[in-house]
Amino acid sequence: MRRDLDIISDLVNPGARVLDLGCGEGQLLAHLQANKNVNGYGLEIDADNITTCLSRGVNVIEQDLDQGLHNFPDDSFDMVVMTETLQTVRAPDRLLDEMLRIADQCVVTFPNFGHWRCRTYLLSRGMMPVADHLPHAWYDTPNIHLCTFLDFERLCRQKALTIIDRFVVDDRHISRPLANRFPNVFGHTAFYRLGRAGSAA
Amino acid sequence: MAQAQTNRSVGVVTPQVYHHGAPLHLSAGGRLASFDLVFETYGSLNENRSNAILICHALSGNHHAAGYHDQDDAKPGWWDSCVGPGKPIDTDRFFVVSLNNLGGCHGSTGPTSENPDTGKPYGPTFPTVTVQDWVRSQALLADHLGINRFAAVVGGSLGGMQAMQWAIDQPDRLHSAVLIACAARLTAQNIAFNEIARQAISSDPSFHGGDYSQLGENPELGLMLARMIGHVTYLSDDGMRQKFGRELQSGGFEPGHDVQFQVESYLHHQGRSFSQRFDANTYILMTRALDYFDPAREHEDDLARALSAANCKFCVVSFSTDWRFSTERSKEIVDALVSARKNVASAIIESQHGHDSFLLEIPRYFDVLRSYLDRIFEEVCGEA
Image 1 (cartoon, each protein chain N blue to C red):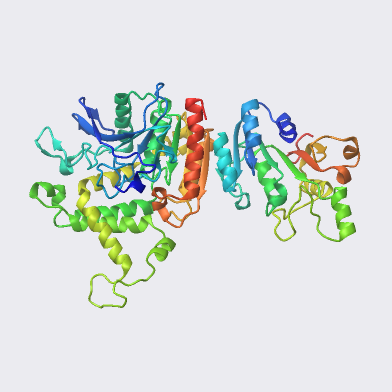
Image 2: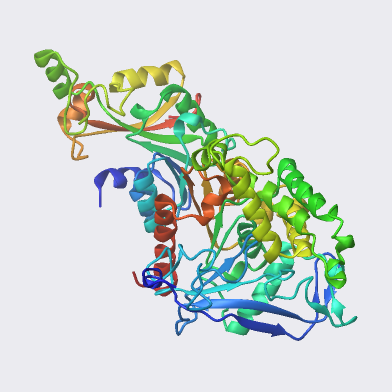
């Protein structure tokens, strides 16, 4: 069992209606369907991923996040999840608004561009960081909106979104004291649970 | 039948006939004292009778979906690329049932059949049949075959509408519905094309109000025109450009000649051959069934409510250049199913072949069908 799926699974109520944006091969939804009895749907555009989802029996819907989520009514889900996808979309800020229109809570995970490895790579080599979790060159990367935890939290403040909780982990999805003390330097990935403006943290 | 074609083919098949001796009351008010359905089956039914797939045909389709009727047949059934051993609808695993719908002209009771009350062909007096009637008659055929629950009901275009109606009307009798290049209702534009086709037929002087067969005539010109307009709407602009371009039959313009461009020759050929194998009254009846289909109508146009009765999983497939049953129509179905909390998966297949794509062997399309149906087999038969 992948640890990141466990972390998200803990945030989802049993029987919830869950929308997974960029659901990939559908592991999270398969896990949530099996263990939490959720009514889950995943949006995906990659043909191979969609085929894998079909083989898994996951409710995968072919839909491009960059075309918007206007087909989903307000409050039509309990939770919208987006793992490792925020940095690939054209308008992450608008997508966050959409996620919190469709559900009153969402979970967002993304890689931290402020991680010390990225910082030292740029500082020492003077080039865009390439690492295990960011394997692409600058010109062909799908990660067009990389950000740090600080950047993201600033956006949340600007939008007055509520950060209900945040889990910072290392590259093996394990929580470490150093990463919790200095997340924006030692945190590899963060799991943010967000609520609408004015909702209780 | 060349040896290469028998590879992965269901081989020679023999159509069967199911006779229903009791009256069938139709949803539009008519009644059939009894009826016949002609059908074919491929593969074998397992002990639990859980591995059956029903194929519903589209406007001009019939029961002959796969294989050959005769060793010397030049062409296999209309969906042979998809149905057979090792194919997406895998007859090594599934027991496949394919029938000709009521009102058809390929052996099932229809306008060309004899009306027992008059001893003459029904012709234009054949009662109006709807997609709901087709589903009811298909369920009676399933009873006859001892199939209580289909693993999947599959159909493209008008066939997809039948699969959707199955999900609504017979919720406990199918595990999944596969809706391909489908719509929950026709658009005004789509109905308009059907009306042009019907007008082409009914304005043919040989039509005689539908009584042509008794006079030994056939409205061939009308049928040909109907098929030509239909055919254009089943293709895409790009697809036609690639297939025909502006190629000329003789290499140069020949003013005064009937057929100059290759696309004209193609349409003439398609139209003519169709007019010789299809019944005009059936064409009118089938297009009417298309036009009338609208399960949301009884639910204040709320498709999600119409689908709330369903109990099966859905797979919705559409094609990028299909403008007769566009991807938007499929998205409406998907949105309604999500809203109704039904299990649904969807795929939009890149293809330049327009609506006709659903009949073609397109690698990604077949991957999607195969993956979905393999999973269905696992679920209903409990093994991979």
